[in-house]
Length: 447
Image (cartoon, rainbow, N blue to C red):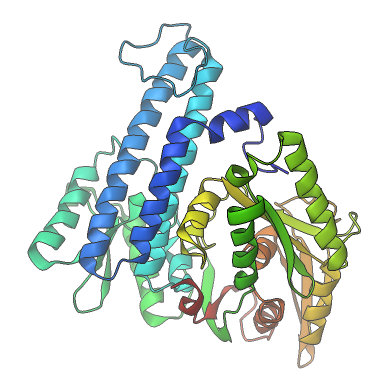
């Protein structure tokens, strides 16, 4: 049940990564960071939290650079540098694979810390997914450590705080905000995207156009992004089954290590806490118990035909998705959110595929699965074909794996999700448009 968690690693390597001292230390830091995030009420609170996060991310990036240097030297059959960092394991320092594992640990830590910055960005932008979508449509900037323009960006951030007590969101600290370098949150309530250059003569026209066109779409709340997507805020309120997820996670965390339950018609969750379960089960017993619980809840929702069922795991998701909310803002305890971020906890969501088809049919959408639902699904190919009539015309499209993952990992209420799909097939959008639907009033769930 380890699924996507470091596909190339075997069980022993995964355990070595999860029990690595730096990984364990980061888990405790994540708990405090999430608590601090949730108590942020002012620009000052956000300024200090961002500064703390930046320091941790820069330290991690510096460590990653040093590890990478040692791997490159070993590849060339050269000795480690005199200032090579200590390994966090008892593995052989002269073995390349020991450093690769160390690199995996710090890459994960890096993503986990950046996911907290993503949560800060969601908070800054009022949990409005259309803004997150718009500002995520660009290439990642890469590490801050060693970046030539970092000093100039930090100067803007510090000057705005010192002179005007304005908070400036640092985009490079996040994984999701990729358009521009910073967002200045003015005291008048306006947000200003800026591209920072050490020399104004070196401004890049393509970056300027991306910034200007994205800003225009956000200001008008209409229009097409440079990526071709059209963020659409519908009038459909965001509703979820996250209360059921919270309950199951809480039971696994506080009591049994493994817990499962049906959270709505056609949907069930099984959660596991690797830390709570450590004193109760051997590795083999843990796997057997988790699988048995999964089989039990599948039977309860009528999804026990393994050739036609949907099951998705939460493992190793931190910092990997651009528009899915980070675990830190899920309505769950800070300790649980941190454990999900660091994979100390994980959960599986099971859905009855027939229930999805039936729910769509009730809102006038014809749907059919385009792949076998037996665990062999190809995430890069369309998964669900949907169509609906508007007047004399049939509108159709296909939903990819990410759309289904959003339904499952966010535990979006199935009827709510089906209505959103129907709204995108209403015929209101010109042919060739790539609408990106966003629910209304998400802040009620995430704030």
